Image (cartoon, rainbow, N blue to C red; front, side):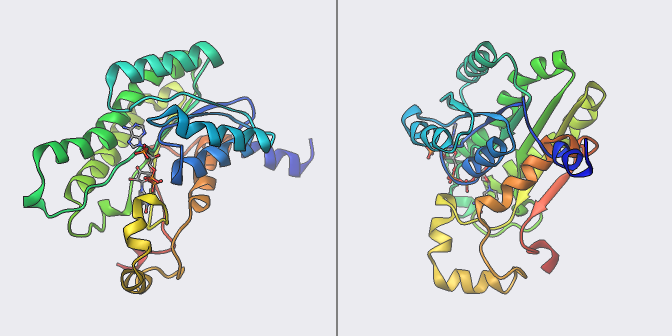
Length: 260
Ligand code: NAP
């Protein structure tokens, strides 16, 4: 094997099965597509099967491998059944990306308990449920890559996202706790912390010119991030090249946090 092939093999996901939650659009879809391009069979997940069908078509049209498994990451029984279905069909789950997320923007005192719980449930409890469901299979195979999508909001929170910042902080701590437990079993567990990425999630912000102008004073790269900016980081962490990265936070923010 020549140098170039050896290098490519380090970053390839050939033969891997990757489950990406919340991948009908946005960052999740970007990651799923990137992993499929790296050779993985990607299992798309979202709340609704009909939202996944067009994405499957896109994968097929590009000659990439994928399937779909809709479930709600906050529903314990549905998560267990979904992962069991994937394992029955594909024989394994090598890579899990806990990406599904929601946002509620309002002041702390205006949060109802239900609104607070919905955000924590989706980001933190959903990541717990999906991770717990795949781990026994990863442990049996002595291989696993778990990637949580965190946020720069953990270190640089803005007003009106207290539940989100708390949930992402929880996810970031959970990764460290899990990494020290599963590292001896051949499993890595890391966080990708995106900066400001233009998706549906941030539509109210990236369509607001005044907000964008203020934001760009703090983004040295001088632009909104795109899902394609996050995908290569996920491919790296999932690949052989990322084998010794464990319990880490990989920030992908165009320099936002470096601005203090
Ligand atoms: P997005 O475009 O809103 O995509 C999120 C996806 O998750 C949607 O397809 C959504 O489905 C799905 N989802 C929501 N609740 C779910 C559940 N209970 N079970 C399964 N799927 C569910 O958001 P995004 O910007 O790509 O964000 C993806 C992740 O990146 C989130 O964890 C977010 O916190 C994180 N993040 C985003 C940014 C950013 O600037 N965009 C920055 C840092 C971190 P529905 O459409 O049906 O609700």
